[in-house]
Amino acid sequence: MTDRILRFGVIGLSRGFVLTRPMFLGDPRVRLVAAADPRPEARAAFEAEFAGRAYEAAADLCADPEVDVVYVASPHDLHVDHATAAARAGKHVLVEKPMALTLADCRLMRAAAAEAGVRLLVGPSHGYDAPVVRAAELIRTGRFGALRMLTLINFTDFMYRPRRPEELDPAAGGGVVFSQAAHQVDVACRLAGAPVVRVRAQALGWDPERRAEGAYQALLTFANGVSASLVYSGYGRFDTDALMGWVGELGQRRSPDDYGAARRRLTGGDEAELKRLRAYGSGPAAEAERVGHEHFGFVLASCERADLRPTATAVEVYGDAREVIDLPPPEVPRRGVVDEVWAAVVEGRPATHDGAWGEANLAACLAILESSREGRDVLLPHGGDEP
Image (cartoon, rainbow, N blue to C red):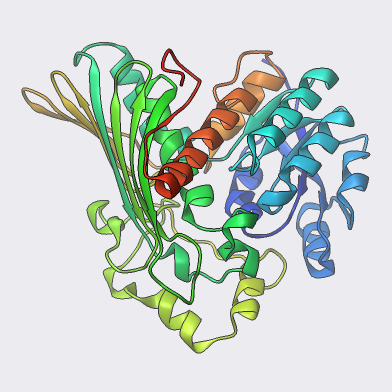
């Protein structure tokens, strides 16, 4: 047993960091020692809470000799610059999804990490969620026969949460495909245990005030023959948390009485100010009661002899008899992320969510957009089904 602590620096103290902050506060294997953000209020809040060093420029954080791992939580279009700079400074890298906006940028990031001899991981994402991991383990046992089909459905209010203009600009990585399909593809790949080789999809947008794609339907085929149906809408009407026992995406307790709250807030307030208030350092951090694991909506894995449903609190098995494998709420949110980073950096073990995984995830997301745009199947060169 080692008493080593992984010392993290974070680039970007906005919403992504706010959601991952409880992990850093709760897991004794990691410590936040530095941060970089252009906002002075965010830097001041970081210094007060973590007693660490706060920099205005990402380059200064990458040069900090006490940082072992850089967590890149900056806007999507900056991932490539920040991840490559960290790797070239000799730091291991954990980069938020999507890994980048182009496959060429993914390859630059992977090459920089390989040349520097550091580890590159992509996350957090919902493929790390404990119920998904447990369901994948059950599928791999073969106890229920081969996996044949996956069904993933998520309806949220994503499009009506406060956004910067670029978050609604597809050219800058805005819209639900880059931000949300990345999660669904990750979950589907974790359960299928094989790469995506074919995509047929329709990406949709029907609010002229929010110009990016806000919904999609996609049919994915994997190299092992598994088929996955992905449905997502961020238009704030039906809420899939109704199918999850009113446990929210972060494992927090939800109420059906909150219906329409995001749209009402947006209608009655200044969007830029509402966005600012969600960022770290702009107000007290919201501490929601966690009653379950994080999740990404309804998921059903159909094997030959049973259907497996990972929920926020269990894996439900519908075979010849119904079985419920309870999973108590995690003591540390996103512990699986630390588990994987620790295994890769400290123990030298292969990572599931490595750079190749992140690149393949982005390829599937780009294929959703390409298939929708061109009205055809898109074949991906990750299995034996190349064009």
